[in-house]
Image 1 (cartoon, rainbow, N blue to C red):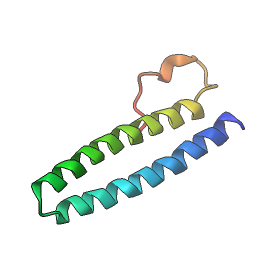
Image 2 (cartoon, helix red, strand yellow; image 1 turned 45 degrees about the vertical axis):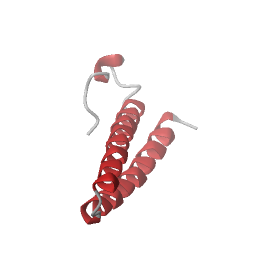
Image 3 (cartoon, rainbow, N blue to C red; image 1 turned 90 degrees about the vertical axis):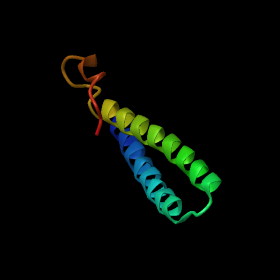
Image 4 (cartoon, rainbow, N blue to C red; image 1 turned 30 degrees about the horizontal axis):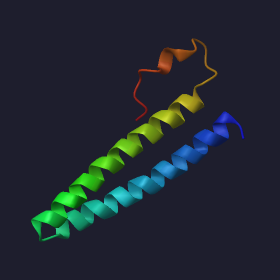
Length: 78
């Protein structure tokens, strides 16, 4: 598997995570109990971290062979 293929996999998995994030956000808006809202908020926070890490990894994989080596390490992948 090439780095570009791996990056595509990360991008597709990111899309799935984003879909789940939207589903949880809808559930959070509809929830009536504070405990349920709180738990959904926690899960949404974890998903946001996973999404950001997945985007960053895909970006690094896509640009791995560019001139300058690790110059993109601190750049955002959004």
